[in-house]
Amino acid sequence: MQTESLCDLDDDLRRSILRHMLTARGVDEEARQLQKQGALDLWLSCQGQEAAQVGSVLAVGPDATVFPSYREHAVALTRGVTAEELVAQWAGRTFCGWDPRDRRFFPYTLVLAAQTLHAVGYSIGRRLQGLDDFVVVYVGDGATSEGDMSEAMNLAAVESASVLFICQNNGWAISKPAAEQMVTTVAERARGFGIESALIQGDDPETVHRQCVRAAEHVRDRRSPYLIEMRVGRIHGHSTSDAQEVYRGRDDIARTAAADPVLAYADRLTGLDVVDAEWLRGVESQVRDIRERLMKKYAS
Ligand SMILES: Cc1ncc(C[n+]2csc(CCOP(=O)(O)OP(=O)(O)O)c2C)c(N)n1
Ligand SMILES: [Mg+2]
Image (tube, rainbow, N blue to C red; front, side):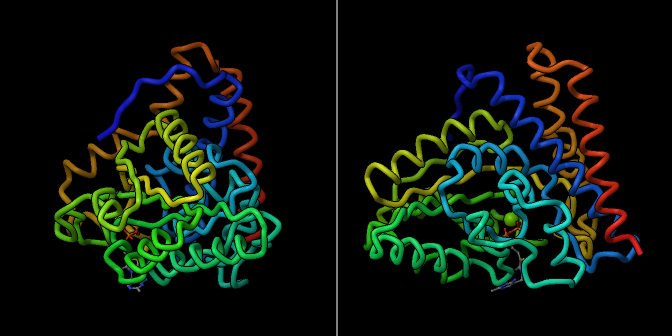
């Protein structure tokens, strides 16, 4: 696993990363509450994966076209999807909620790994049209067991498609541990298809950011695919319909909660004097406003 200690992100970028992580956390928590009240049909929490999501989407830049899976709420919000737009689908009010072309952020895909083929095909199509063909696709560890993922990696390698695959390995496919799904890492598997790859820890947004900047350069400069596997923690169950206590050890759940990347990054930036209590209060108040807007729109 590649690890690095990082110190070269400027403080404005660090504050921006933390603000997006705190916003995503607040929206996710509000959505969980709304689901408990019956205002949303379902919610799949991204808590524990904010560092991987915010660090990566800021690194690839606004011009990359992004194909998400269904848990990329921090990516969506950072890309400018509003909280109201984000939860609309889970309230059964719309197929998507946002304009995919406008945000360069495609609709959520619940059919596991289907978005990997969409992403590769889209990138190839854009290249044929002489347009910017840089595409980023997010996929979970469990979804990599689908045939679509193997087809997508093979096609991307053969066509040298400009696709960055980002696998958030949270260790679980609902109740199935990753260790029971694969004997290699996802990063190793990508190399078998001829795709360069890296395996990193996804709980530090600065490590993620730096690795994704490099990966994006690789894809853009060489016009060939790349895969980053990020090890992340899933703090809550698979969805609001899932009781993870039934199949997951208490210690593991407690360890994951204690390693919360949002709290860790807030503490780190506070310790470095990059943010202070007043700055944090300001963000808290913005997040409260967003949560209130969500509540007003969706709470029945
Ligand atoms: C083709 C297909 N098969 C099965 C499912 C049911 N299913 C939904 S989520 C999930 C687990 C996916 O795990 P992973 O890819 O690791 O993503 P995570 O939920 O952990 O983010 C499964 C099996 C599905 N949605 N699509
Ligand atoms: Mg998973």
